[in-house]
Length: 429
Ligand SMILES: *Cc1c(COP(=O)(O)O)cnc(C)c1O
Image (tube, rainbow, N blue to C red; front, top):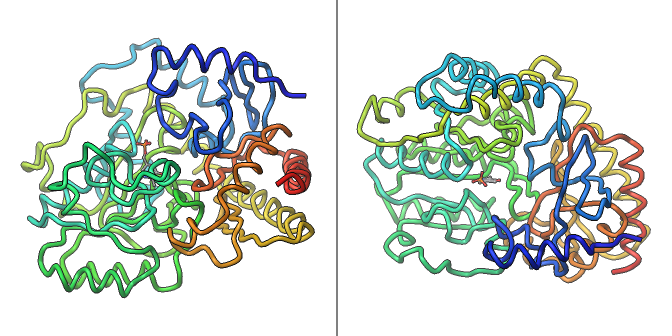
């Protein structure tokens, strides 16, 4: 029997000095109820909490730990590099190596700049698109999450959807009015927005495969259609690959789906668990960024050597062993087949969305293709399911609006245990 006594004590204590007891809202379990478990350590596919409970991890720190926790080459590289100081505030050769490595993996990246989070990457990419086009408005899709910068906190997915926050206090109406939104997968709605705002739209930003309203797949022609509209209207197409980058393929969603963006943002996997983001893309845009141009963007710790060596080591492992991503995709496929079996036996409606190593289960009786259909799924069932899984030693994202993230340290035995736990948990909801 799992006991959460130490986590309860820590959560009480945390709330005395940290707002809500957490440094990022979804961690608080508020939407699923109960006490968040405090993690002590992790290795491979397993998390260990303050009460020494072991969990099979399906969050992977929300994506970065794609080859498992405390991956030895990454740990060693960090320890070795730390001896030469943790920051200089001056350029290093390592930053060039990192940029060259990413260019060699992802299509369509002439130049790339490192930042410290996915939020920063998206915020900076939008600024560059605005500076380049001289236009202010941009289109984002309902339920897509692009970090917590003001312009993106309009109909955002992830935590904003999890907590059912309609408008975010603190984001001014002046800012929000430049954010145009429409449903994901609805190309006609995009065309309408574009025609209603002729020569005013700087960018369209999109998660090519959204993972922040559960996993959603782009319908055939949707991303290609965005590409065409952007070409015709002088709009910058930004792919937010913070989640999909280096996960769906070594070249991210651009490679997997065969559609090119003008700017691409990265985060999560690119830092191997260190605070890293990046934005990259076509040369013609980059002529406008400081110090080349006047679009200012900077960062005291950007390109930090410890963060760079961690991400570099992970990406290099993945690049040199393409079988790793293949193994991960195969495991996810195996999990999907197992899930289907137990869900079918359960006999109630469900939808599984899946691509590569992103997968989500929606308790719904109709296809989940956008935010409205994701929100129409049975959230109460998810809450019970989440806790039933946790009790059985499986740690899922504590929100119905998040993709599960697999990591390659998962064994087939772990997957079998997970499928069995799903079967049992479904009986409890
Ligand atoms: C996580 C995420 C972000 C934000 O990244 P942070 O590092 O949390 O700031 C942006 N876009 C997408 C698609 C994400 O999944």
